[in-house]
Image (cartoon, rainbow, N blue to C red):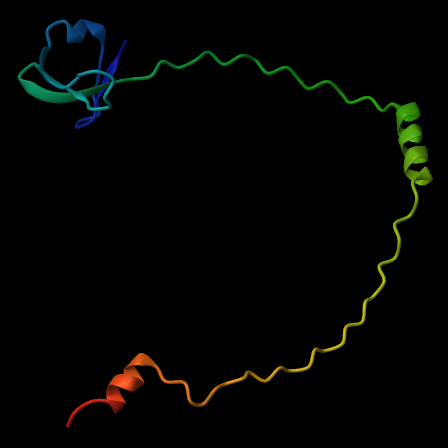
Length: 118
């Protein structure tokens, strides 16, 4: 297992970590770096993820054309009915409706204004 200092980017091995003194951090599964005192210097260390072995990639198999299946698909598509042509619907504009407004509507504020005392 190796560790990398987030301050100086130095990589430490397990042999160097044996003499290290843990100062803080490392509680639970937090992402807070652990601070160590190594050789008189403070280092904030994180674990270096192990590199996974890359498997050799096998070439993709060549695709095979199934001519019988392709011909069957073409025949089925040819047998489907053609979609109907959309009919254009003509609309007539609606007549404008005049709002009925009563001119003698008295709101609460209007009534208070009219009944105020000078």
